[in-house]
Length: 112
Image (cartoon, rainbow, N blue to C red; front, side, top):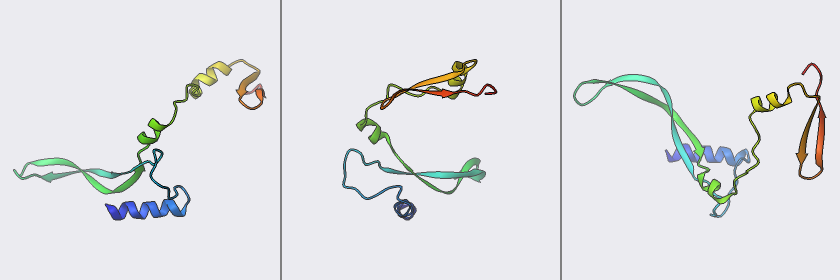
């Protein structure tokens, strides 16, 4: 398991996805999750056939729960795309507020 994590971290370091840093509240731990390869029937100790998931490899993931607790929640979330499309139906302009420059306008093509 350590070899799997080590190879993945080296790959992330080479790709500049992550970088070395001292321990802080922002550091996210690594989790290994098994890749499932389907279901195989195997006998147990009592010679009963039990369906079991076969593990074909490991997936290395970052656990961002520690990071989430250290950051503020965004109360101005983007709406879902279907909600946006319903609001835009029949309109000729889409207005949005940009923090640095105020309101911006985007023309909407008639065929859209």
